[in-house]
Length: 109
Image 1 (spheres, one colour):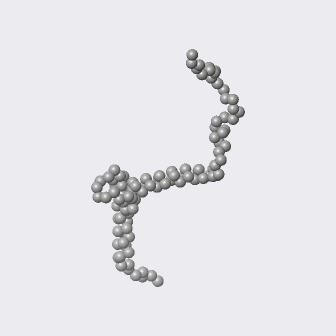
Image 2 (cartoon, rainbow, N blue to C red):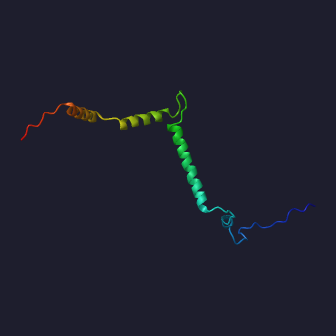
Image 3 (cartoon, rainbow, N blue to C red):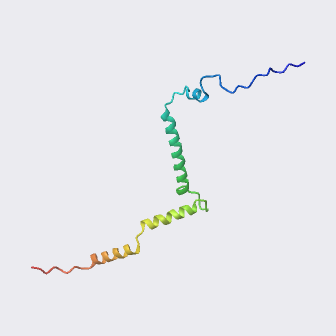
């Protein structure tokens, strides 16, 4: 009564001589390949820069925020790096005392 679609065997191989990925690689894009590399590097670099700025420099106001512990840790590290140790402070004080004390004139020849 109703004629169904004719049965055809499923193809297990391609009748085309070129594969799909070979067809895709032959695009008509006019841009050189280095443009894609530059865009990828610039994108990743901008993500890193924006994240670093948000964590360390952006002003979130007076309220506490999620980056507060990181900022406090960095502040402690900076103060430890830029301050003098007790031994260095003692050395500087002793050098100041030596420079401030009057020197006796040399009584030689």
